[in-house]
Length: 323
Image (tube, rainbow, N blue to C red; front, side):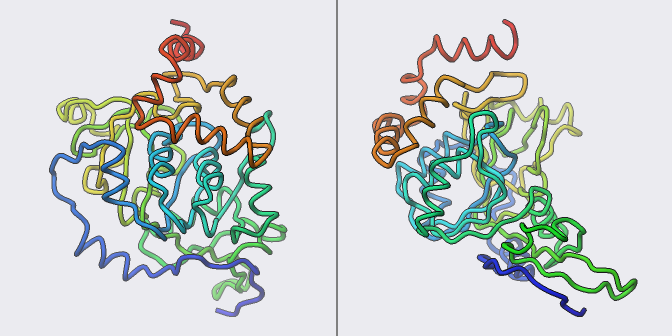
């Protein structure tokens, strides 16, 4: 195919589909075996310095924050990030653990853009390539399909394309211009769900984002869940299982695991906490104070929830459910 023009962004992870398929075939544990463990063990076991890791969805919805806080505690370095996460990306940038970033949008809607992202990118500390929301999810889809790229019309004629690593080609069938998005292969995917059994079969209620595609584009997959349920319950409604056990490497029980984000049908996001956090994030000093108070001083997720307080957590449930 004739390349018409291409974006000037870097391609941070080669879309080597055959290597990915070989890894899954030869190295991934796809056994129907218990995978339940804590955040500390999951991060120690499956994330190493320099890994290319990813998050899905967007905003403050269903964010795997208990895992992210543990990554910060362990100080995993030189990470490469991808996805439409918000707080996940912010926290890792704030802790100075990131080298490169495939990004769509890091903003808190009515609360404004991320001051951490702005400060980090303007300083040049992190190399960035930009993608549209659809473009990022379709890159995961390409990997899930087992192809090195996927042709779309997204980003054509936009400035986002110019800062991406996509290419525009002439279609060999029609001659029209199409955008080629490279497959996005993760060393580690991290997803928060509503329910999972100990083997890794997962159920997401409400918006599913692109969890289905990302789970299938990850060499290793860590799943945190609000609730661990018996395998019999999963089997009772098999059509609800969007992530099957053979894709998952670790299952972590994390009630309120998205806090200060929200979970559909369970609890609302913590606006008070978010506003305080963003105020702190406006300066390097404030960012350090926030990380010290809410991450480094808590030895685990249980400590964090105790610090938030049962009363506040119950208020967030009531805001969402009315009960």
